[in-house]
Image (cartoon, rainbow, N blue to C red):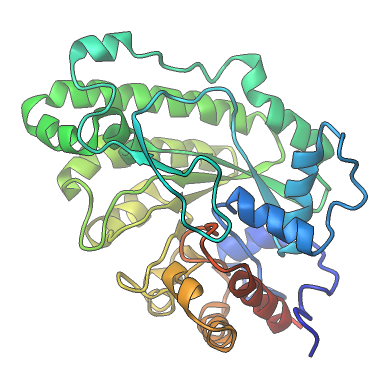
Amino acid sequence: MSEYEGLLKEHQPDWQALLNNVRGNGTPKRVHHMELFHDPEIRDAIAHRFHLMENIPEGDPDRERKKLIAVNRFCGFDHVSVNLVGIDMPMRHCSVQDTADMARVGGRAYMEEHAGPITTWEEFERYPWPNPLVPEAARELEWFSQNLPEDMCIVAHTGHFCEFLAWLMGYEALCYALHDQRDLVRAIADRILELHQAEMDRFLSFDRVKLIWGSDDMGFKTGTLISPEHMREFVLQGHKKLADRAHEAGRLYLLHSCGRLDQIMGDLIDHVRIDAKHSFEDTIEDVRQDKAGYGQRIALLGGIDVDFLCRANEQAIRQRVRETLDVCMLGGRYCLGSGNSVANYIPLDNYLAMIDEGRLYSN
């Protein structure tokens, strides 16, 4: 067998088949692939290795957009992910050297955990909240709506309720504030909801946006970042409002969250009414086991553990993919992908083996 035989076969995206798969309308005819995102270094490496940009001039002002489409199609996706632009929120970051083989210039950044930009009412009043309604915020949505091939759809990302609380206050400060300044936590949560509802209105005004992906890390290895009760009060209500709005508009609402969510999965399925769950780590839960549980009620996205992808050899990765698809494909409600995202420290050949095996499985 030649290297990456499956990837070198022509792939025909079908966004409607993707939606039917997520809804559980029977076993799909082929494997559908989804990722939260590729790190830019991974996307660039795939485009370079497989000559995906040969017909796009260096000076093309839309070169990066066309690269996203080309790489996603090559990797078996039926979609591209598009966000509003120019509405970033000032945070406090710490930086470290990136030691990956495809290292990021400038290193990797992570959030300051002790104290964020809002820990007092005075800081809350001074904070420069962005405005998602400015016309230029939707320029990427406008371009992809006009130029994306008809067999692909747009996935829009929003819903960072728990993350923004922890980032704006600092995780440590948030934990204290839940006891000492609940009114401030409430005020920040309300502003986050206003922001996301405005984002949602922009997303839903574009017909080619077919799925909304709430991306909100809520937990760690053994539990939720804040108590389940606080999750229900300050986080899940926001997701419910977004999910309700998406459903009213005929869109699906997916959820990405890292961490152990056992204590709130019932809330997410029955109250928030998510259509799919993403992010699976073997030390927390195995997607193959979840298929027989809540995987009968919502779709499961990804599940090939990132640590496994980093450390395993090609044969083990291909076997894990086949075993996962044998369990999860039946009846639909499964998309193949990494357990979290395709980070630049995942060996490229390992990631390619995963998606290649998924393509071969369909034939």
